[in-house]
Image (cartoon, rainbow, N blue to C red; front, side, top):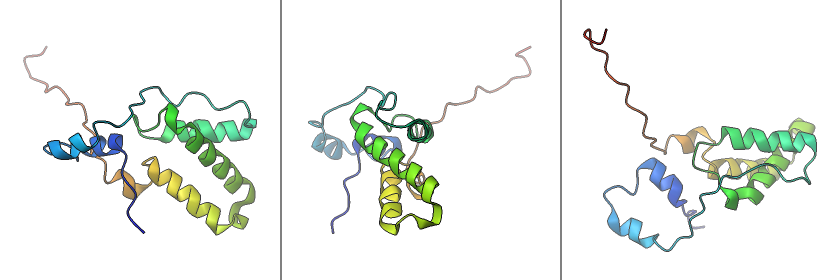
Length: 129
């Protein structure tokens, strides 16, 4: 089974496209979605909406967009089911949830592959006062 293609925004967060113009050029025709994921669908129950909001809040900034709404909904439903069923949740659903979380860069291993630029703290001088 071939490796999954890594989303361009995740590659950008990792810094994987810097210094590789050919890799960036391969993805130039990719559709861009800049709108945020938004609020949960009205069809979800209150507890499912809470799971949606939890996923949306915990995902790293810039990962989830409006185009990910169905995937976030699937994740919210699976998180809700896991919390209801606990250990009785079928392993196949747990694996599916793990895959969704990995796609959203929400597992420790996936976060370790992302390189986020942190703001530089201004240096403090004794002459600042």
